[in-house]
Image 1 (spheres, helix red, strand yellow):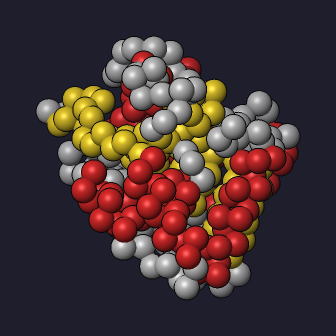
Image 2: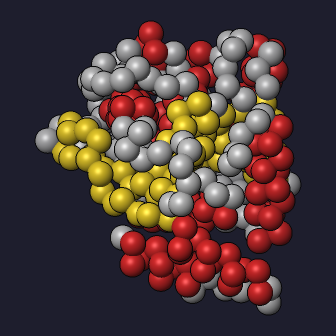
Length: 293
């Protein structure tokens, strides 16, 4: 894993800027990689996460927790490696989480797993130099839904009961990339997606479970700030999810921002759009007092 990271960093295109090469060398020298740490065993599956830990620092570091997409039935943490690169440049610790897919366990297993990963990181915070007061959760598509779930679904719902350990830490912010806010809509609603429906299988109470794991079910005052990035031409997770979430958070008085990508589809944003997105992410984090000190 360390060799993989070094190879990726060393081959990042310089884009005609010397600073890009300098940053790649700096990042390669400043991160320790701890791959495939088992955080939970469930359904006879050892669930793993990768930790990219800053070296040469003595104080606990702000840490981003990333979940991959794939409508809860596809994808891998390894396929998301490139999405982590901007966080290295920003100087964050990074945790890349895998979770049970639909073929291993149906809903709400993926959400339960991510809550357990959050608890594990709180338990092992000293080991990996994690500042649990500056945890940011993020992901794309289903990963965006999982990030929203960690930031919004209350502990009282009981989705963390399969793992013991330190108390659940409260995420300081959510960066939601075109995530599912209303699970029922993509399971049996107007925007039903076959892959999403596979997460529920043939369960007779699928819509009850969908409501239980839908972030929109739990919008209230006092939530961590949320930044949502969504293309208004997205037909996989419709843009309306972002609009509804933004409106509900506004009504509850929760600090949040919706960054609309005009004509943007389900990811695949242009370099110019991604530059704008990460400038907005940096501003959002700074506004909320987050980031390396």
